[in-house]
Length: 230
Image 1 (cartoon, rainbow, N blue to C red):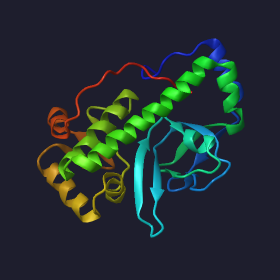
Image 2 (tube, one colour; image 1 turned 60 degrees about the vertical axis):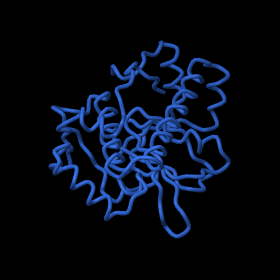
Image 3 (cartoon, rainbow, N blue to C red; image 1 turned 120 degrees about the vertical axis):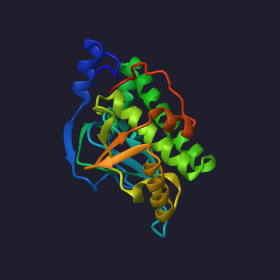
């Protein structure tokens, strides 16, 4: 796909040899659970997921959303025990790589090791953007930022058709990602829909005014250069 950098034949052979499984996980199930000590490394092949942390009383912060091509579990695979969870937002398919072979990648394929580090840095950057929203943006700006960011990520993957893409997030999940109450999220979401920024129908979101949505969120067009894929 145009969203991703090409791989050499040697890199493809190494990745295929390293892959140990192609796994399906149903929506609502944990891909990685908090405290897990044997979490593997995954590439999300299809579907949506999210990474989260929970407090003892059940409150949850969604750290970032994961789309096809994203790396899943890098932190968990390098730690003795995962300090977060990853849940399937929709039914997903995963390419599975054993955590015990990550060191082989650094030793034998330094180019792929660099790409692995790049993907980890990209995820950190997405979390930084979400933290900026939670800390500094208004409720309307937070939702606008989430919508335009997910729209652009989906568009790069060919998942947008005539300005519309599948949007599987519930309002509770939006609230958990944006640091808002469910009531505040619902009211703000309705206000933005009535203002004509976007429309929802049949689980799909149509962005009606991308430029206005981006301006409201203070998120501007970025370089769409192809990115690594493991």
